[in-house]
Image (cartoon, rainbow, N blue to C red; front, side, top):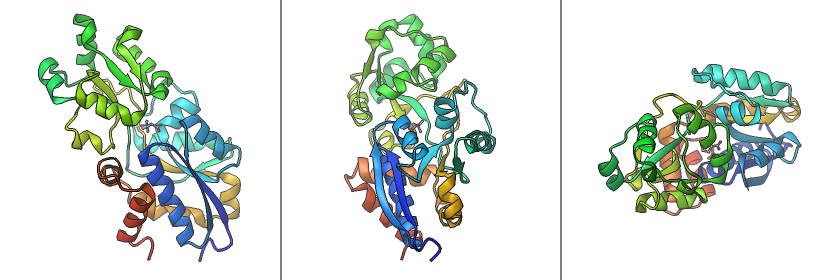
Amino acid sequence: KPLEGADLTVTSKEFTEQLILGAIMGIAFEAAGAEVLDRTGIQGSVGTRAAVENGDADATYEYTGTAWITYLGNSKPIPDPEQQWKAVKEADAKKGLTWLPPARLNNTYALAMNQANYKRYGTKTLSQVAELAKSDPGAVTLCVEGEFANRADGLPGLEKAYGMSLPAGNITQMDTGIIYTQTAKGACTYGEVYTTDGRIKSMNLVVMEDDKKFFPNYNAAPMVRTATLKKWPAIASVLDPVTRALTNDVAQTLNAKVDVDGEDPHQVALDWMKEKGFVK
Ligand code: PBE
């Protein structure tokens, strides 16, 4: 087995898709013969990145746009997903991190609303949301996470890009899981959602189009410590077929098993890895 004798630590952020992706990575390493320590479920993007940078973990599935804007401090996304990945890979090579080839899975932020509010306000695009904020300031209330409220590729950048300036009182911060139920109830007109989340479909939410292409591509890709990869180059060939199989459809289906059906993320990951033949 290609990773026989390796001790590898995997990590992830705390939300469902990340827990599943972290589990998938760990299962792939184990199937290749490695001993795996699971440090998934770290609170927030910055802490998860730090864990890999400082050696508390060897690898994680991270999103290209998150690295480009939030970690590397760029302000303009690169429209082509492959070029975006390449730019991140080049910049992070100087930081001791290697980005392996990306998945098609692109989990971007979006604003979504329930059917009743959609009937009432009829917005389809973020430009229309910005217009509504001008004509009827009270109408545009938002439920968002703390991280989204503060990231350059989150609310501050979105307001700038769409020429929108919402009063602080219109914005309520909460955990990502709560956002979906609050948005479905109409407690906020718009909720900050992840486009691969299974609850968009199950709760029948309407996703606003990012017509100005403010949000970058957020393709998931393995971000590995270069030192670890030098020691265990087979990590690349072990992860490659798994990453290739990860699409938006797969993510939505697996995320829904956890967030809608209440299954365990690790079990969902294992079932999928078996179904795909990545583990016996
Ligand atoms: N995202 C959407 C966020 C959360 C989900 C990929 C832009 C991130 O983890 O960076």
